[in-house]
Length: 327
Image 1 (cartoon, rainbow, N blue to C red):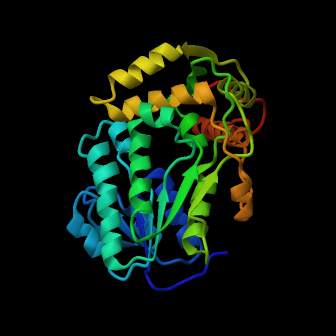
Image 2: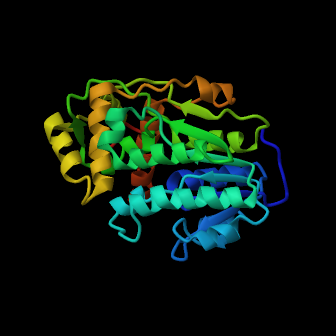
Image 3: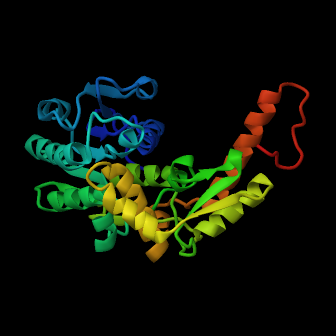
């Protein structure tokens, strides 16, 4: 278990995002006081309910970062522009936020005498992957900046997230019984649960002697087709599969690189996942005392939640059990 402190010595960046929000919840569960860097336009309701101290600013504004660093000994950051950019927000960019903004954060941490900097990066950043994904190219550049800094860096390198690659954003619609297969869909990947990565980040931020870099993977290696097979069993019906050829993925990644780098990154990552797979061992999670969740369990939980929501929407008197419903 991490050490508990009442002083606010930990700064969390990206706490309104999916992974960052999970880290915030675990910090609160462990009784670890923390400050959260939040943008002026962010919805901070969840962070406030967790007791976070808020510091308004953003990675592009160096002065706001200097203010946020007061009294901080540890920085944990998941902040990036990908999710908002994919949703249509053009207020930031990979170059401004993921490259320049992260460098601003590193320099502010150096100036404040921060002792530990936990950066959530990515596993499997081969030259091919980085060449096809501006998002991962930015992460590699930030890793290099950290290694050249005076900070004690902890590079958290998770495999692909289960939640990301079973979502409509990456081509799976359980309610419509449809799924996209990228390329041939035959290369295995050990996708990892965000909750497991969040808990790992908290432990790495608070343990006495963390590693400089750690790769975090899930316990189950599944191909894209096998993932869809699990969906079919969990939801009780066949999914219609649509294939996107490798040539189309490569062309899209190359064509959109400058105009829509976030979308180019998704296509590039999907292509390399299909070409090379994404095997990341789960041993490091277990060494941290975390038993990783299998992908099949995540999908089963999705199906159970969908059935529960459908039953609740049907109102009192609807059957509580029975076979999986057709959504």
